[in-house]
Length: 197
Ligand SMILES: [Zn+2]
Image 1: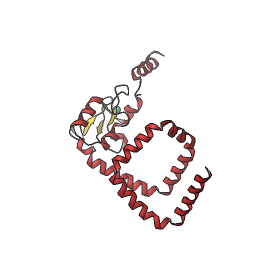
Image 2: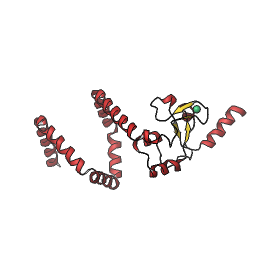
Image 3: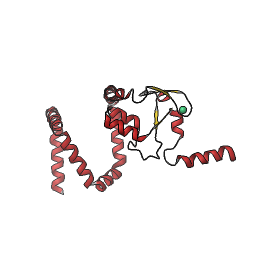
Image 4: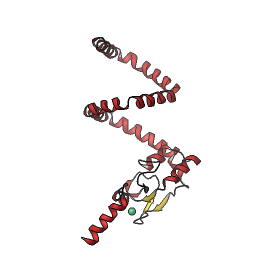
């Protein structure tokens, strides 16, 4: 154990002292290596996760606060850089993927509950189409369907996945008022509250 710690300390010190020298090389190597083996690395990571799920979960649980503080600090320090990168990424995905769905999903439609105009892929919450899970959360696309559209180009396979989900199209306000799970029971309770109490 002591040896391991010594080695780690040594490595840390070495890295610190030679940071400027190592950084570009390390980066260059990593980019090249990860591009070459991206799929292999992903599969390796997945396999590692599958085999060590409990250990990893316990580690995250134990270091949750420390990690979130570190992330916060990093974000504060690099806010502009992260935002620029994020916007660039999403704009690219918007062009590549989201726009390819126009025609299959209407670019403009009305909220199926309140009837206001809503639009596909708008970044403004108030006038964007919010895709509503109507199958009690049993759809193939579980979380935010809009993000899925950002990540996935329109292909025959993806069209079939999308169709199978049978999403409703609502405005932000109507969507936020409906729970995904057990909505019929919820509506019954609301009805009772409004009309019978
Ligand atoms: Zn609405």
